[in-house]
Length: 217
Image (cartoon, rainbow, N blue to C red; front, side):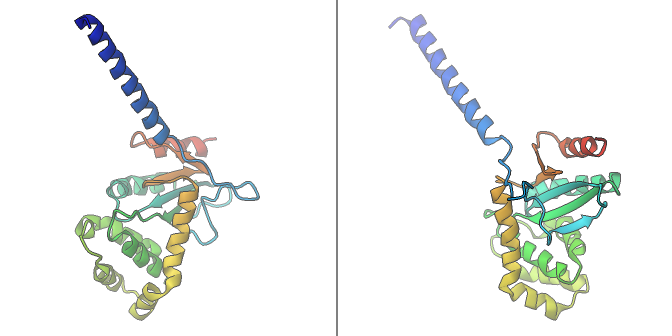
C-alpha cells in the first residue's frame, strides 16, 4: 500500500473514532429525562422536602440535589448563598439529598442533616457541613463521631439526635430523595432544577441565568 493512501485511511479512521467519541460524550451530557407524576407534575419537590427559603406562591422554585461530601457541591456552596441573597423573596430554595457511593461519609453527613432537621435545625447543619467540608471529607472510613460533634456544637438535643441517627426511618428519608433523583436521571451533584426544568451546568453562572430568566418571565 502506498504511503499516501495508507495515511489517508489512517486519517479517516481517526476521524471516525473522534466522531463516535463525540457522539457518546454528547449523549452522556444530555439533560436527564424528567420523572412525571400522574398529575403531570415533575417530582423535583415533595411535601417533606427541606426548604431553605420560602418565596411564596408566585416564587420560582429552585431545587438542588446535593452530596455534602461532593467537592463540586462545596464549590457551589458560596455561589448558592449569593443566589439566595440576590433573589431573596423571588425564589423558594429547596435542598434534597443525593449521596454518591464514591464518598465514604456522604450518607453519614446526610444522616446528620436529617437528624438536625427533626429538631428544625436543618439549615444550621447544612451550613456546618458545607462550610467545614474540607475538614471532614475524603476520609477512608465513616466518621459519624465528627458529625455528632457538629450536632453538639450546634446545641442540639443529643439524645434526640442519637435516636434519629439510629432510626431506620431517617436513612429511608434520605434514600427517598436519592430515588427521586435517580428517577429524574441525575447521576452527579450538584444538580439543579428551576421550576422543574433541569439546568445543564456548563459554566458557573448557568444557575443564576436560569433563575433570572424564570424570575423575569
